Length: 550
Image 1 (tube, helix red, strand yellow):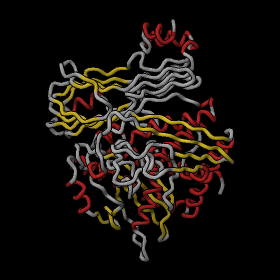
Image 2: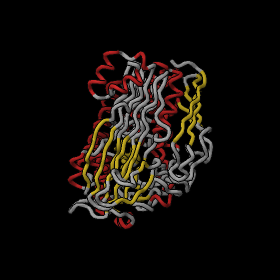
Image 3: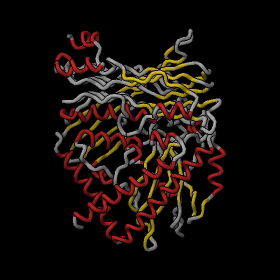
Image 4: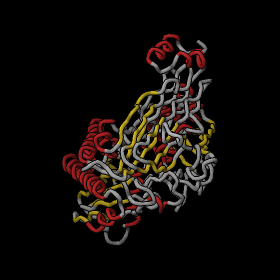
C-alpha cells in the first residue's frame, strides 16, 4: 500500500478513538468517568490486535487477550458472533481484564458477512459488588471478595439488548444508578465505534482498511526492532520491593526482571519475582505487558507508535503462581503495583541506554469514600485517583503532582468534590523538600487534607510508604507516601500503606503521595536552578543546606 493511504487510515482510527473518548466522558455518570477519565476506547483488527494506543496506556495490551477469550468462548460450527453483538466481561482470568472493577465491552465489525475488526472499551465501575463498597478492596484474599465476575458474555445479541444480563449486574452493585448510566454510555460508544469503522470500510474498501491495519502493525514492529538493535547486546537485572501485599503488612513483596537484548529482540524474564501474594497486589500478564511496552517506548524513544505489532520483537517469560503471573482465585484489585514494576523495568533498561535513565517515580494511588449519607441528588460513592511525582533524569527535573506512568488520569477538582459529596478539602498543596535531591531534582508530592461532614468508610490504596522512590546516580530518594487519619485528636496516627477505616463526621485525614527520586550528585545542581527552587518553595532554606550543602 502507499504510505499516504496508510497514514490517512491511521489518523482516521486515532480520530475515531478520540471521538469515542469524548462522547464517553461527556456521557458518563460517575466522577470516575467524567472527572478521572479512568477508561479507554479502541479500534482493533479482526484478530483483536490494537491499531493505535489509547491515552489510558495500561489497558492497551488487554484487548487482544479479551478478544481471544471471546473467540474461544463462542467458537463452534455455526457462527456465534453476529453483526450487532456486544460482549461484556470484567473477569481477570477468563477475560484478561486488569481487575474486577474494570468492565470491558467489545463489538465486532462485519463487512461482506465476515468480521473485519472490533470496537472496544474498558472502564472502571463505581461498584461491582464484593466485600467492600467500591469493590477495590485493599486487603481482599480471593477474587470473589472483589465483586461480581463476568466471563465474556453477550449483553447485546444481534442488536437486541439482553436486559436480564444488565439486571444481574445492577443487582450486585451498591450504586445501580451510576452503574446503569456508565454501562449504557459505554455500550453506546462501543457501538458507535463499530458503526464508524463500518463506514470507513465502505468508503475506502474493506481490503484497503485491512491492508492498512497490517501495514500499521508491521511498521510498529519494524520501528521497535530498529530501536532495540541500537542497544548493546547483553543482559541486565533489577528488582524492587512493594511495601506489602495489604494483608501481611510487615512483609515486603519483591518484583524482579532480567532483560536480555540479542539480535534485535528484547526478552523480559519475570521468574525471579516473589510467589503470588495473599493480598490483592498480584498482576495478570496483560498488566505486565503494559509495563514492558510502556518502559520500552519511554526508554528508546517517545515517538515510537505502540500497537500489538510490537509483540513480534518482544519475548516475555513468567514463572507460574508468581506475583507477575497469578492464578485464580488470587485477588488482583490493587494493580497499582504495576507502577513499581515500571520502576524496576526502567532501572534495568537504563543500563542499556544511560542517556534515558530515570530515578524512581512515586505511585499514583486511589481513595474511595463510601458515605453513610450523601448529598441530595448525588451518589454516596466517592472515588478518586491521586497523582504523585516523577523522578529526575539526565538533564531534567521530575514533574510534580501528576499521574505517574501508564495511566494519564486526571485528579478530581475540589469544586466537584465539595459540591457532590459531604466533604471539605482544607489543604491542597505541593510539599517542600519532598522531591529527592539531585543534580536533577525529583518531582514534589501532593498533599490533600479532608474533613468528613458525614460518617463514612474510607479505603486507601497506595504504595511507596515504607520503601520510598529511590534516587539514581547519586541522587537522593524522594519522600515516602503518607496517610494519616483522625488528625488533631488523641487517635491521630499514620496508617501502614493500604487499608480500610471507619470514620465519623467531623474527623479529618491527610494523604500525601510519594516524591520522585533525584538523579545525580546534589552538589552538582545548577546554582540558578536551586535558587529558583527556593524562591518557588520547592526546596526550603533548611532543605537546601541539608541536601545541597548551600
